[in-house]
Image (cartoon, rainbow, N blue to C red; front, side, top):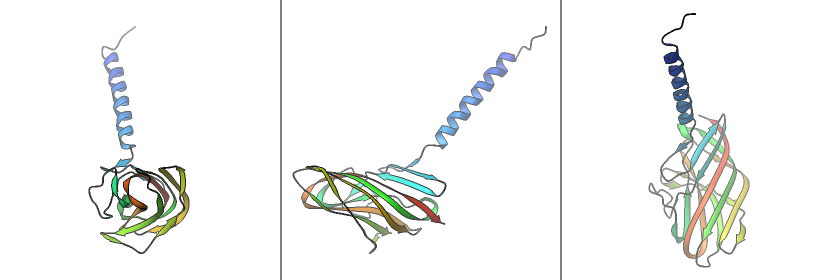
Length: 173
């Protein structure tokens, strides 16, 4: 019986290559996350994006985690690769302080620093004295250079924090 002197080394190298290949696949499978925004996932022609990045300025490039105001925007990113899409479902959890009440939540669209006259009014549910939810089916179009955002209005100055998700379909380049 003859033995190969490098058999153990060959097996070890195969195991190491398999492990590194698995790690590389795992790293490439992680959803894209931009500072201040949640994950954005695209599978085929479907997309989903979550954000808790808020600002009193709809064109803000430095969002925070809370607004101290009578109104607040939840900022989302535009679809990647300058694609167009249609938002088909939205959901939000909104938290307030100091006895304030939410009286309006709208899905809006921004092109550059300009807010467009494209609003989708959303139905609001109250789950507790300072917690609200939105969960709705919508049809809200996005062109390749537009960003969606949620506009939250309250009845008084308060701390506003929110986490919102959109999902839908990519419809073209």
